[in-house]
Image (cartoon, rainbow, N blue to C red):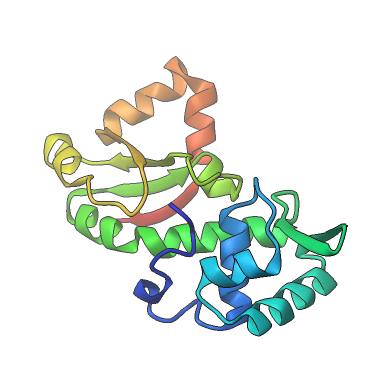
Length: 181
């Protein structure tokens, strides 16, 4: 699913042409696009897309490469601005699902590639839910906007994983805490 899909569902946060183009490119960092494609896929006029692409290229947030008479644009996951925008967009989109899980959770953490802004459109979103009611939490852990890998653990069991699987435990602990009781 493209990151630009359903942008209006996030309360108008990504409504300007520049932001919509940026979100489209950030959501598809593995591909390059010319201005007409960006216009069609981000739902804005061609002139608005062209202006936004030139502005984003001037800022260094996207690259522009001329091939023949066409210019192709791409967002790079090496750019820290692009990564942070991707993380922000992911967190905004997870909000409804987090709200469903929060009453059952002690803590909800985003970790992995989505927490680093390095995820691709087909990547999972990794979430850890610490809950004293794990079965109920697992049942509510559906309906997220993208494919989510939701791990549910009891807090005591999670603490025990620090010794059993320290690398994984530390990766999750470096993640972004989205909710805490």
